[in-house]
Image (cartoon, rainbow, N blue to C red; front, side, top):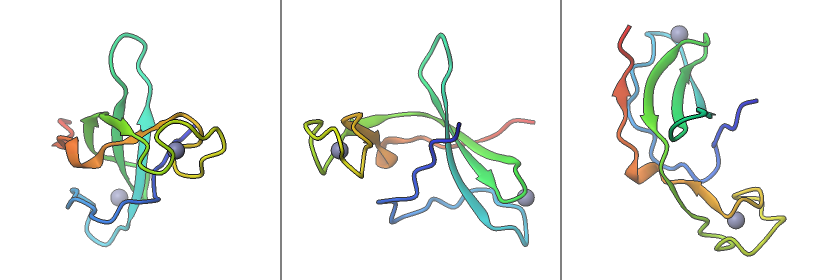
Length: 90
Ligand SMILES: [Zn+2]
Ligand SMILES: [Zn+2]
C-alpha cells in the first residue's frame, strides 16, 4: 500500500531519476523495528533514493481534523524539509 505524498510538495529534490524517465513519486515504507523510510521511485519502479521519514504536525488541521484532506486524519505529514535523501547503495 503506497502512501505517496504528491500534495503540498513544491520543491522536488533532484533525485537520481533515470535518463528519459519521469519521477514517479514517494512511497512510505513501514519498518517493524525502526522509523519508516521514505522511498523515491522512478516511473519504471526502481528505487532512486531513500530517506528516514520525518514527520511534522499537519499544517492544515494541527491534528484536530479527522477528515483532513492533507494528512488523512493522522495529524502529521511528511516533513520534506527535514528529510536527508541519500542515493540507494546497490
Ligand atoms: Zn527508471
Ligand atoms: Zn491534517
